[in-house]
Image 1 (spheres, rainbow, N blue to C red):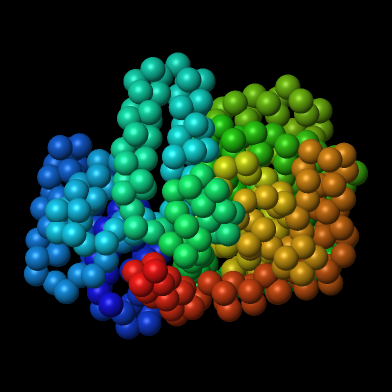
Image 2: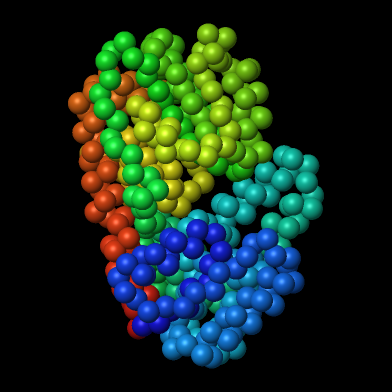
Length: 362
């Protein structure tokens, strides 16, 4: 086996696991800051030349739109099998959300750009011989649409980097100590903003009952300002004083280490890194029972899954963890053990190796 990995964003998610299990591979890393024309030409040439000089048996692309199209063209020209890595719904929810977000911002150019990207991504995925996806939900989604047969899709989650997120589990605190509820999300997406609004409604009920609790929301994007406006309109002044919309935060591991519970409500996700990182730090997670979160959380064992739109579900779950130190620590430790077992670099590398072999042999 010798895959050629074409990647740009978070290349370590594929390259480091392959290195961990000693797989021989080649890599082409695309510079996203290059212009459109240069990205296409440079990617095409590098993929073509690597296929010609290395024993490449599969092209695994972890990039889309222009460089993805270039990688597909080079693979097709050489007759090399093409496998796509999907961390989200590249031709469904993600594009719909990006178009809606640009419509909200009044950007017609942005809407057209994402529609063009959708067309390119459909061409790439339609031409692929198989897919590596990060969650069972994504596999079911793409198979139900008829893009792939079940044996053409391998589920390989995202690896965890303990060297980056190596915080110890939160220690039980005295009742007099301040309680910190944390949410981390990407507020560039409308459906994640919608999730935060539902999370806020649940957490607000907790803040009303627990004067020692405060809520920090971290994450940048165009919906930061609308979220602050939403809080101003819907939350009472004494509640607003205990809610912080921090925007983008560099040292997010510090927040994971100091928080008591992570609330993650999102309607657009593959296998959220936020949940993975929090679990790896021993922080218990309350998330909506949907998408890749179902792969990450066994309800009542490695976290809590809730219906955030059902009356009382979210506040009860959060309150349960704030009130019960032993349960909070138990769920956090279980989650960290799950990540150390299921998301270790070597484990993900073996699964990726097996998945590519499965796709290649049919």
